[in-house]
Amino acid sequence: MSDARIQKVLAEAGVASRRAVEKLIAEGRVRVNGEVATVGQKVSLQDRVQVDGRGVRLAKIVEATQVLLYKKRTGELVTRDDPEGRKTVFRKLPALDNGRWIAVGRLDLNTSGLLLLTNDGELARRLTHPSFELEREYAVRVLGEMTDEVIERLRKGVKLEDGMAHFDSIERGDNEDGEGANQWWRVTLKEGRNREVRRLFESQRLQVSRLIRVRYGPIELGRGVKSGGYRELTADEMRALRAAVKMETAADLKKAAPRRRPREASVRNADVEIAPERSAKSARSLGKIRPPKIERDAKPASWKGYKPRKPT
Image 1 (cartoon, rainbow, N blue to C red):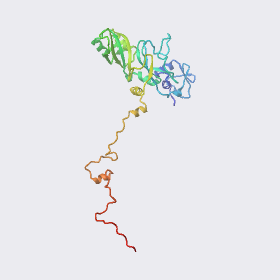
Image 2: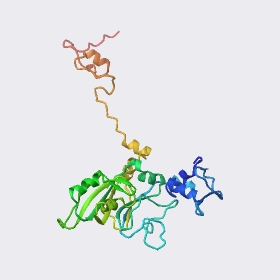
Image 3: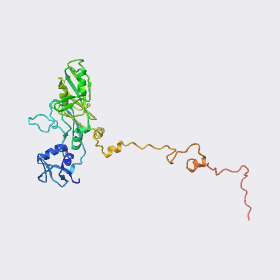
Image 4: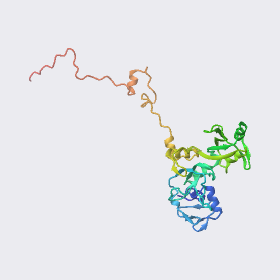
């Protein structure tokens, strides 16, 4: 590794996203060779880097990117440490040789469902950056009357305390209890502001009694993962996730490239196709027609055999 900016190196080492690393540096929690680091400082493999007094092994920043699909339970926190000792999503994750797991966005205490975690700081940054507009989909159980006027307002936009917000789509979900007071809805949006889904419904005097994230970008929660459990993304899911944030690898691009279509037999060995009306001579000159086979044992019709030679 050549010299690189410290926030990029630490992000690739899985310490945190670049923005979070910059905050750690500003707080004086990062040291390089015993000295307090500065934002933009260049480091190399020979440098000794510490975060909160703990060494970071820069030699392993090239380790393979890993992404976990975690099914969060209601009541779990998306934080590394909680002063009150409540359960967090990090307590049962597999250990990493280097770096640490980074949560892609957050889900509040009372929200369950899909949560992505990765050891790649740059991937985490892109997955949450607004410029990539990754769609999040939620299943929401709403208490109250959802009229056509309310649905239209939620689609067009509602002014919240931190600006305008809206759902990109809102559709009725599966409701086994018919027209009861609690109804399921499916909503999508491309932002990750704090409690945005809940606040949008609350702005219309509706109460969210249950909220589940079921999709993040191309990754769906699906079935097969128990609450509080996780699994690694498949190779196809990893390719789709990297493509969604324009992080395709060379191998991905090679695999996605269209295969070269084989040329027709008539033009495989020539620059142009031989038209059927061409003469036999021109076709033979291009190697397409073989000359007739000569029967070497054939004899003339008047041939009566060999005559013996007279002795000399």
